[in-house]
Image (cartoon, rainbow, N blue to C red; front, side, top):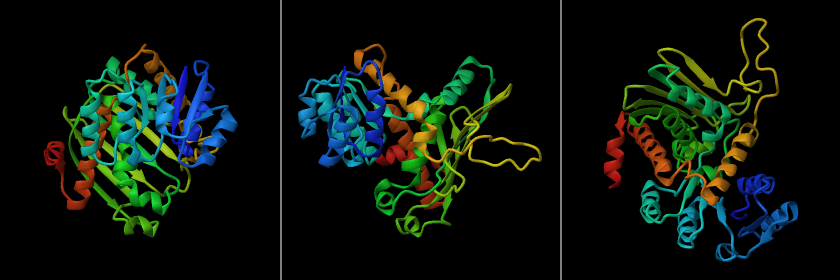
Length: 336
């Protein structure tokens, strides 16, 4: 098949490398406002360069991967759907939930599949944890914990337009706890603080945050995030039930030292980048998209799924601002 890629920044170039290694992908057709980025992809992966998204859509591609700037996501998704082309788009769907809802209304009856890039759904550990929940082997759940600790904050220019730590970072945790538990969050209480890069505080954001989630069946979720984890990139998931518990991310490269005498875990060099930690998940995610393109499976992460995680992020953002619990129905009503 022929796959288009719109946006050849860090993640776009990474996806180009992954896609070029899949046997089912015969050719990549790429476009980026920065000509040098597209030319680099052409040289590295033998891609064909198009001078605009419209040219990519008109080139006979079977599917398109959107890794352009967030502001461009809605327009590119809608243009691809109008052209009848299946879409993979990195999160978020749009900069705001309101804009995401506009996209949802436009695509849900189109018959064209749209997959949003929440790669942790394809992480082997997270998939095993979900299977343990679905099989009932953990029993009734009482607690789920998800952690995302970045080794260093993104640049100031990125932070200024990111929407904040809950919308940009914790949203991955919100998506995975929904997916693994199969439950919906009904209320949040979040808090945050700043002890690191001053530009994060100046942008009205926090660099460290915790969120307490209440699910519709009474399960409690605990989410931890920071932009400053000097030891490395730490992403873990724990699911605790009345019969058993399970964890994802406890591998030999977990960036956490044990204080117990004689314990050598973790054994390997710590993860220090998300592309390192989730390289197999990204490959599985894009392989799934090729299956979506040929029609052998539906989108494994729809626009509607992505919006549900965004509602939680909105509620947490409001909770920190007003220092109070926030029910999800409140933020939904505020947006209607």
